[in-house]
Length: 354
Picture 1 (cartoon, rainbow, N blue to C red):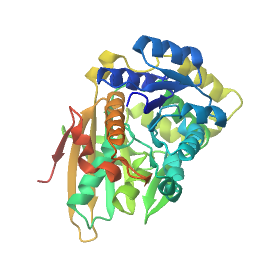
Picture 2: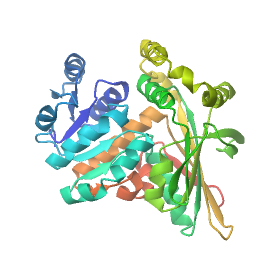
Picture 3: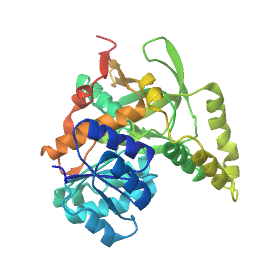
């Protein structure tokens, strides 16, 4: 078991956090990435083995995966990095997990379901905060109302962003990506901050903004519900900036602007401190409705997002190592059920209408 689990991108903020918590849980992953000095330093600190490979070097990736049962891919933005790692995993019959929240990645991997099934490989992107808790909440609601045709999800994350998450979001703005919802089973583009909604996460209503969160893709595969919208809370100034990006997106695409912003992001702290993570929390809400007017709601409270990402992804890794992987494209709930998230300490679920 000590050589069966590999973390790629282990030198990034989230990858390193997952590696540290894995060691605390008695696991001994192989650490991997393209930056030899940084990966080696972390491996020495945690007394773990390590391997080095760049994602554009297929031969190096082939060597990287020797003796590995499951890869937890943590090097984003995943729209650039997922495909070469997935290709290598399929070549070597290695199960693939990642912590993306990028809809394009979910859709691309879902399209490879048959290929993965033939290879006996599970492709499960979104094993972290994006989208394990919200996916499990959606599946729980669908289980309670099997006739549901509309799903609404709300997320209130109380904590700071890592550099990697911020850069991924910036790249999406540079590419001119707006909002996304799902209508009649199809992804439908909408403007950024297209709609707002008052959501009660447990202490009164909060204004939340429609966002292209990963569940717009994954919840459809988990539940079959054709109409899906996801909302998130932000400070008012952030909401205003999001709305303005509809008209000022050209500025981000001007020569040098995005590069300047990325340099500023990289100059900041890599992510929340241990104390900030411990003080943070994430609140989720969901509602499903059917054509007859029936509706059910539920809430979920989890640890802070990066902590939850580490705990959820490692829980899934342990299940895969125990032989519980389901070949083909999977979501957290389609692979392990709606109650998967409740196996994590500190997670609480409440049915609002019961």
